[in-house]
Amino acid sequence: MAEFTLKFINHRARYEAADFIHECEQHYHAQVLAVAEEIARNSTNKPIVLINGPSSSGKTTTNDRIARALEAHGIHAEMISMDDYYRTVGTYEIPPDPENGVPDLESPECMNLPLLSQHLAQLAEGQEISLPRFEFETRTSIPDARTLRLDPDEVVLIEGIHSFNPVIMGDLAHAATGVYLSVASAVVPEEGPRLEPYMLRFLRRAMRDSLFRNSPVEETLHQWNSVRRGERLYIAPYRGQANLTVDTFLPYEFCILMQHLTPRLQQYAQELAGADLAPIGAVLGQVAPIDYMDFIPEDSVLHEFIG
Image 1: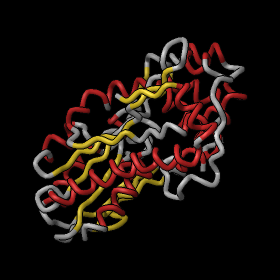
Image 2: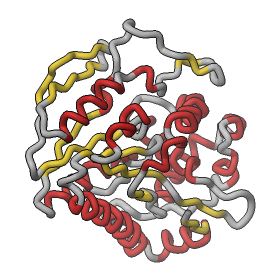
Image 3: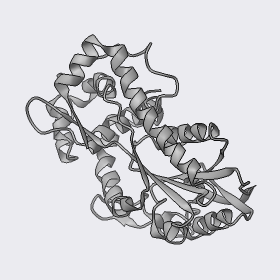
C-alpha cells in the first residue's frame, strides 16, 4: 500500500499543482496500459475480463480506459453491464441487512448470477447469447434485449462487485482474467491516525452522490456502514481471484474533494465517527486547495466523481 503524507500533498498542491496532477495521472495511466497489455497477451485463451472493486474505485472509467487501450493492440472490447442481471422486484425476497436495519441491496441474491455465469461460459466457447436488460425505473428484467457473440479479435469486459463470486469465477477461471480496482493508498497527517483507503473512497462517493445522485452528504454517511458491510461479505473474500490490480487513487484528488466537502462535513463530526471515518473529521481545514481546472485531462478517473 502506498502512503502519502499530508505535508507532501499540501506542498505539491500549493507550489507544483500542474506537475503534481500530471505525475498522478501518468502513474494511473501506466497501470491501465500494463493491464491492457496483459489482457491482450492472453486474449485468445482468456476472452473474458472480470473487473471488480469496492464502491467508488473508479470502475466505470477504468473499464472504459482499458477498452481503449486494448484497441491499440487490435482488440475490440465488448461491454456487459452486471446491472442488467438484476432480478425483477417482487420475484424474490430481498435479504435484510440486520446490522444496519435496511434491505441488503448489495446481496448476490438480488442478481441472476447463474444466468450470467452461463452466458459468459457460452461467450468463451464462441456461442451467441441473448442478454437481458434491467429497467431501473420499473425494477424489471427484460429478457432477450440484445444478442452478442465474440469474434476472434474480441474480448468482453464486465464490471461489478460480484464478478469474482464463485458462481461466476468457479467455472471461468481458465477463460477469464480478473482485474481488481481499488484505492490502495493512504494519507498520513502530521498528527493522528492516517486516512485509510476506504475513507478516501468515502470522499469520492460523498462528492459523486451530492453532485449527480441528489443524495446529500448525510445520506451517504447514513448508508456507508451498509456499503462497507457489503464489501466485507461480497468482495473481500474473493480478492485473491484477481490476476491484475490497479490503484486508482490520484493523490491530488484529496485536495479537490476536501475543499468541496469540508463545509458540509464540519457539521457531521458525530456521524463521521459513527461510520468509522473520524480521521476525516480530524483533518478538516488542514488540506490545501489546489488550482486544478486547467490541468485535469478529460479522461481522468476523477471526472467520475467531480464531473
